[in-house]
Amino acid sequence: MEYDAGVDDTEVVIETEPMYNVSAWRTHAKGGKQCSQSRDFCYLCTHRSFGNERVIDENDEEVPDYHEMITNVIRTLSAEGSEVSTIVRTVFDMYNENVRKEINWYNPVTKLNIKEPTWNMASIERHILYSGICPELHDRVVDHIFHGIIDSHNKHMMNRMNGRVIESERKAFMDTMKNFTNWRKFRSGCGKFK
Image (cartoon, rainbow, N blue to C red):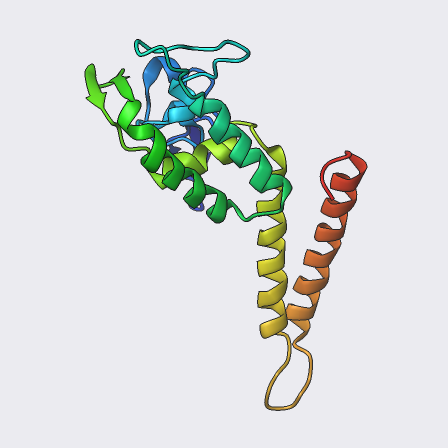
């Protein structure tokens, strides 16, 4: 908790919390950006890939490595430049059509075993953006934010009545472009995706 002097010098109490909670696994506090701070089921957090191991079931058939399959789909779609929403929908459909019927999950908060747990789109998106599986996706989201701001400036930059540029919008546009240019230089200098 922090204290901040208000305008009239009265004390204002501000409740704070970490932006990224490194001990969320212990508290199961809800509401953070990472999977560990959500109470939603996340298949990629609760299950692991078999790696190079072959797993055989009781019928002497090889068990598919769904974790690796889903991870590969995410990486492939990201490399192709797909939007996050497209990747989320693809993973959601893949999980529900091929994986869900095989899954049992012990919920650490409720202490219940859940057969065929729902892996909702918000949880999939959270994992994709904050797990580090494809860091370029988060960068691409920042690009989209810049594009949205630039587009908004453009729509409001000219006074329709007299055809003159609105100076405050022009300044804001130029500031956005400067920051966007710096962001792109930083990204290209770091060897990230192009």
